[in-house]
Amino acid sequence: MIKDESRERELLQQIVRGDKNAMKAFYDIYSGYLTAVCSRYISNKEDVKDILQESFLNIFKAIHTFKYRGKGSLKAWSARIVVNESLKHIKENE
Image (cartoon, rainbow, N blue to C red; front, side, top):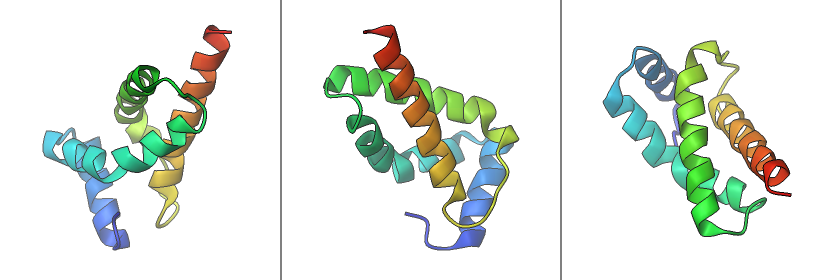
């Protein structure tokens, strides 16, 4: 987890600029938490992997629209994307 707000902001700025290393760092930091979020909705491990892949693509595609609102806001915004992708998967597979 990112403990310092300035480090979180810097990581965000690097991702917006398209820095692949920053994207990998973001993935390394948040993938465990986002996997747990997704697993609350989806029980099949392969589906969780697919949903997370789609979620990370969506996160990186839309990161320039994210408005930083303090420590934890990036984590919450990312979790919201994972929840929405999980719900979309459930709805499509009813």
